[in-house]
Length: 495
Image 1: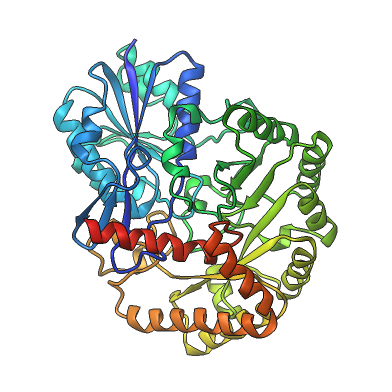
Image 2: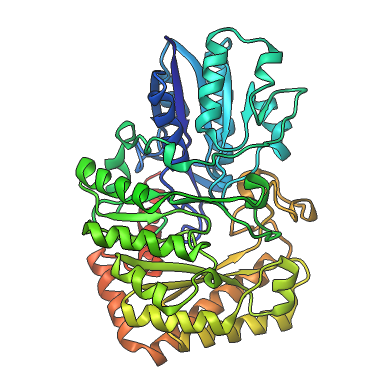
């Protein structure tokens, strides 16, 4: 039986901003697809272009490209490959995705090349709006939606020489001249096999000592305890890739995965990459109770964010801490009610500050994320953002993250922007924007103000951050990111 090659692309770092770009995401969506193919008896070969050589670097225009060369990636594709999957993991990495597709098609002209969509990240992109570009690079198919069941169906169909009519029955499968929207999503998440991390170069990720979430232990693994998000934020790709559906795994299934990964890989720190894990308060409490009752001895961090209003009460926060939660990211987005209305993002300052107080009390580090440059934002709105940041610091927020809005294929605002030359330029440091210099100065000023306010209200936390940086025992991303930037600067000097 032919082997399915699963390729995770290189990581791209914008050379003028190693702080905000070059975030490391372990490819959990690809690990789920690999597990599902293997579970169905289909041979799999994983080629992780970044993970296999994370400190190998070359320059490409305004970017550093980390990982294997394209020739090295193609050389690892099995000669008997029946299908070549390329994972469109993050929008900034699109240039690597396109280069790998071109090279794979050139080397294996008769082998179908399939692009897999990443549906569970706000930093990813929908495939259908950029389908023409992907087909022009040589892709034969795009597979939108969650890939576990669809990838199995596609490999089996190609293996038996299915007709175009038979292939059209696969939900979300597109090819030149044929579009297909996703009509169904995985409902029984407990039925999916755990991610096949044994097929990935984990040591390559662990050796870096930085990740998407703050890495405290030497080893960590990402998790998805839920999928989707019900909110309609207009700058976000998730409404397009998940159709505002939200689904969850049972507490027992999540705890089972933690126990398995701890025994199999010696991992006790888990980074939740869920888009919005706390939507169902009853489910959240049951999950915590399951972890506590089994005395798993694990810690976990909500690193990709959650809707703070869905964390109902202080009692829920306290229970989360007791179950091992050590970090929670929330997203006010703006201090301006007007801008939040434009984004379609409700946010309760009163509720957030109350829960931040409780997080401080029980030992959970907290982050608040903001965006600058949303269409319609003005100086008054930016001043309100500054005031909200100060208020949150006073109430105990541990760190902030500030992003400059960039259009994402699939988001509602995608067509409202122009001026970029490459999809990889659509990241949180969009130097192509006419107002970038002004927004970046504001971003830097807000970070400096935040540190000044934190030093004023919580000087011991500043001292702790410095110690954590030196020890490489990161409790917040703001401790970890300067270390990441330092590593990237040294890589760039060698390139």
